Length: 355
Image 1 (cartoon, one colour):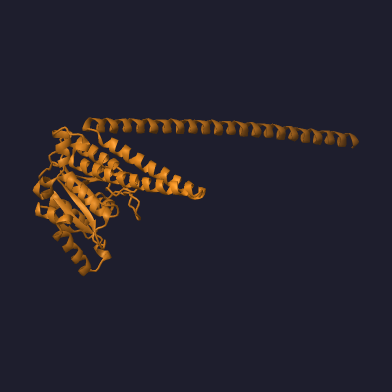
Image 2: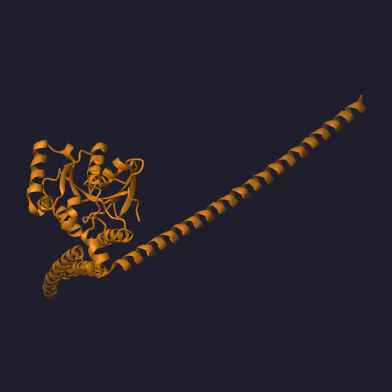
């Protein structure tokens, strides 16, 4: 259970909206920040930052549903694991800051999908504790930015419906002061929220694929699968025509395309299967991954210890060899010195006898 004075705020949005930059401004901690379309945040991470002597704000960095390396199912499982685990431990969010680039000329497909999934995750009751913040104002003219902001607010499919449910719209300048201002706005109400995903999985014991967010991902999977099945059938027709015409090169190219479509269909089937999970299995998977990661770290540590021990032994052997060489050289030098002295003595005796 968290302290009564602790504040938990999730930071969400598409890749490149400025989530990691926002968190680094508040927490004064270096966080990986992307400068291209590759998603930096692949897991849910929590960063503490001090607001006052008794208050710690925890900013929850989340991956977007436009992740470049993972499917929507993987992203949803990652977010659902943290949300259900924290909620079951009586840790509730104070609010969510959803970031959007005002520099985008229009609402792109990935941004629409991310926003739609965000609504499904939250549900209408949590939207009063949501801040919709636009970023990248230094990249646009004021008039252009204001026009895009107005379109976001007035369009029900964008931000309009959320604003009608109590969500607040702010401009984030990118400064530390601006970031803290957004946090303090959510802190003023001192309210805790339950997201629809938490209600459905923890309180109602639903599987992930039965939640509103899971149903949406499942619908997208079905849509994608039908698309690839149709493309597979079309390529099959083309391959048969190529074989009839004895065009082996074209038939081979069609077969390669079919292999690619089969691979994509198999991926979608796996994504669909991975949605059929509940909170207990999500947490079990989480702790199994943590255990595997710890074992991997232990193995790396042991390997490094063995490497250092081998290096120590090598250095020790080298030092012994160097000492042996030095001892031998010293012995040879003393032997030569005695030979010289003896030679001088013999010469001196000979000269004395001669005199």
